[in-house]
Amino acid sequence: MEEKIKLSSDLEFSRIALGMWRIHNSSREELDKVIKTALDVGITSFDHADIYGGYICEETFGNWFKDQSIDRSQIQLISKCGIKLLTDNKPEHRVKHYDTSEAHIIKSAEESLGKLETEYLDLLLIHRPDPIMNPEEMASAFEKLKASGKVKHFGVSNFTHDQLDLLQQACDMPLVTNQIEISLFHNEPLFDGTLDNLLKRNIKPMAWSPLGGAENIKKLLAKPEVTNMADKYEIDAGGLLLSWLLEHPAGIVPVFGSMNPERIKQAPKALALEWDRQDWFILLEAARGKRVA
Ligand SMILES: NC(=O)c1ccc[n+]([C@@H]2O[C@H](COP(=O)([O-])OP(=O)(O)OC[C@H]3O[C@@H](n4cnc5c(N)ncnc54)[C@H](OP(=O)(O)O)[C@@H]3O)[C@@H](O)[C@H]2O)c1
Image 1 (spheres, rainbow, N blue to C red):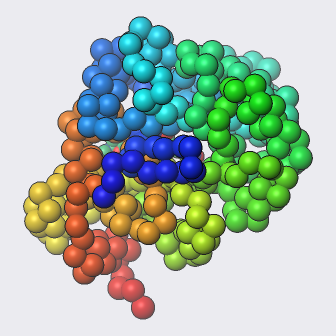
Image 2: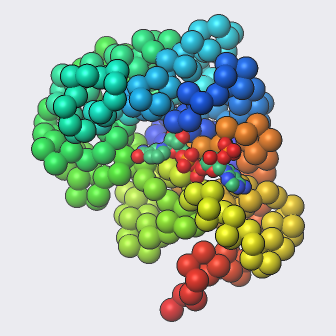
């Protein structure tokens, strides 16, 4: 499998992206090791959101990034906006809510640029569908951010097909992804038409929480048929689960959330794994606890 994937003609990500929502728990040295390990193994796409770490993860990354001599064009920075959290550093928020107004999208993206110490975002996502979102207003924010060169591409996260259609109809530029929860343990999108629909539209999905949770992983690994499979393919649990997703023809980009350099180093092994189809289904059955119909 190729190490890169095109989300549009001029947007290329590493086949596996790295999620940044836990970097506020890492020291600067740990973060340095995590990101440099990722870059060494070809993971160049980094998934942020304004709210991660209670609005501090972007700044944690930016404080590190500004001291590096990394060529900006060789990495891809993704961020998200639209959720307003209740946290001590946002006393003006009286309730957790969504804000997809034109003013907020522009302000949030500009703040992300400042915190990440970058001139532009490769991709900005609307984090969650907002029950009172106005597609025309959102499209207008996208146009202004694109025209100013602050954001190159736009997409959504956790949207239904209809919500995606609604926003796409208002936008001149293509929405390049829908970042949704998909894993062996959260496999409904493989069966409920979500991935079929994205495949039909040629929109590459990004998968958040692609391993599906530490407890699930532990339970799965306790099953001999799965332990044997990891041994057979000479891959660790993370690699096996990432590879299980990569097998889907929709071109899923898993957003791997590990902060463990050893696991990050192993992850790209997932690209080389060639599945025996029956093994893929054995994993599915082990996770679902039942056979396919
Ligand atoms: N769009 C959205 O709404 C949304 C929502 C949630 C998350 N996200 C994005 O998705 C990214 C990834 O989410 P995630 O962190 O839940 O993804 P994940 O890759 O499914 O999970 C990573 C977690 O699993 C642990 N882990 C890895 N291998 C393990 C093993 N063999 N046994 C036990 N635990 C293991 C990791 O611990 P170690 O660090 O020790 O390896 C880490 O805590 C986030 O960083 C964020 O960027 C987006």
